[in-house]
Length: 327
Image 1 (cartoon, rainbow, N blue to C red):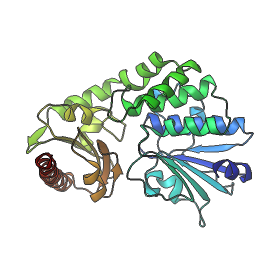
Image 2 (cartoon, helix red, strand yellow):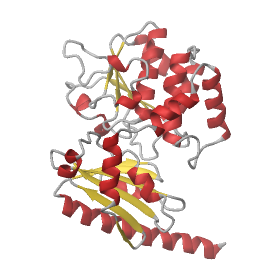
Image 3 (spheres, helix red, strand yellow):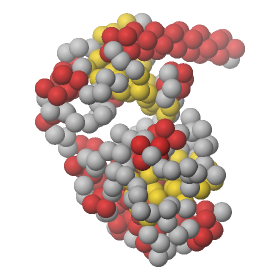
């Protein structure tokens, strides 16, 4: 069905989510390269700019922030987006009726908003899904495509060590390396090397951490973000550090944006599930990694989030205890 839709389309728009990560840009650029093989042209869109650490990816210089007004798109491919809102202004600004939508994603909270939905929650990344799709469509996995696909795989699995990595994931990674992707280089650029502003933000957040009833969290004001010249809309790994603390059952980072909204990142370890909290607050993601956006002010958002997380910890702890008693 996807291949038929691509063959029929004349003007294709490819959108990934706001606050993009490696899977977002890896998927976006991989689709762009695949369309070129099919002699199709796709306009690649993301509300946010490409971070420097992903500038090595092919076609990043072609990524635009807005659809072309002069083009009447008849097909939209959404990659790594759990719902329509994650596509941001790039989608909401499109005139009605919206184009035919192909939704390709791996989030368990995906709302199946597409006319065609290729959603596989068991996949570790959207690029893992795209790899098999490309194979099925006889698209040649060039070194450039392999680089884009492996970037998504590496970033969403944190270097192949998150829960959910399967033998199939590792085989996909091996195939992409064999096709020309450089695992060491991708890992260094996408995961390891960070600008000083990120280190400064982490220091700010670590100095403000609070721990209570299983939740370890930090709240960062927009003034604090701007004081260290931090431009990202996510904590770029700080929330992972909090969730890795042995005593913490859940970790959270709240960051105030310039417009007053609050971006929230949530992480945990099994058997806990932060997607429950994120969905209840209007967001989404995975059981172990989710997020949402809350209205300000920061203090009120923090109170709401802390209460929601702690209630979820109690509820989920009880469920785990009941399960253990049953066994």
